[in-house]
View: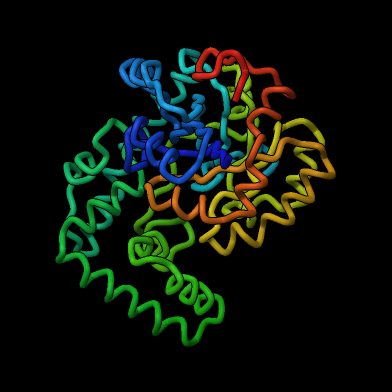
Length: 336
C-alpha cells in the first residue's frame, strides 16, 4: 500500500482538514500519512480529533520547517529550502516557539505582498487572504486563492503572461521559463509570473522575514524527537548542489532525503534517480511523500506505480532504524 510522509492541511497552506486528508488518502489506496504543515503544529482540538479517528489510515505528526541557507552559504532566508521533521513531538516547546515566530512573520510577509500586488492593479485585501487561509498561517497558496476569487484579476494575469511571452523572444533563459509556465495549470501562473524569488516580475514576492539556518532547523527537529529529511531538493538545486547535499548527508547534518513526491512535476521526476543514487551511496533514509495540498495531488501520486512500490514499507523502515517515540501516532505499538 502507498505511503506519503509529506502532506499539508488547512492549518498551513493545504485545502483540507486533518480528517479530510485521511479520507483522501483512503480513497486512493494510501495507507500511511504524515502531517507536515509549514511551521505549524496541530492544535489541541485537532490532536483530539485525530486521537478519536477510528479509520484504517495510519497517521503520524510532523512539521515542515522553512529553513534558511546553511551557514557556509550565508545562512539567509530562502523560499524553498524546507526540512521535514517526522515523528516530532507537537508539545515540544522549542519547536512550538519557532512556529509562533514563523506564523507571525508569515502574516507580516503576506501584508507586504498584498501591498505589492495592489501596486500592480490587482484587487486583493488582507481579509481575502485570511479568509482563504481559514487558520492563523497565511501562505502563498492562500494569496493565490485570494487573487482568483476576484474575476477582474484574470485580465491582469493574462497581461503579465503576454509580456513574459514577448520578453522571452529575445532571452533564451526566459523562453525556457515561459515554456515551463505553459506546462502548468493556470492556478500555478501567479507563482511563476510574480510570486517567487525567480519569477518574471521580481518586485512583488517577499522572502521569509524570519528563518533559522539549516543546521538550527535540523536541531529543532531532532530536539523534538524527530527525523530530519530534506524536502524537494530540486527547488534548491541552484543553491545546494548534489555534491554538497551528499557531503551534508555523510557528515550527519541530515537523516535523509525526499526522493520523489510529485509525478506531475518534471523537475521532481528528473531529480529522483540522482537522489536515489545518493541515498544508496550514503545509506541515508529515502522518503516518499506527496507534498500534497489538495485531493488532486493524492490522485496524481497514487496513479504512479513506481512511487507506490518504492514508498511501501518505508515508514516501518524509518521506525526500525531511528526508533522514534510513537506517542503521536495512531500506531503506538509500531505496527504500520
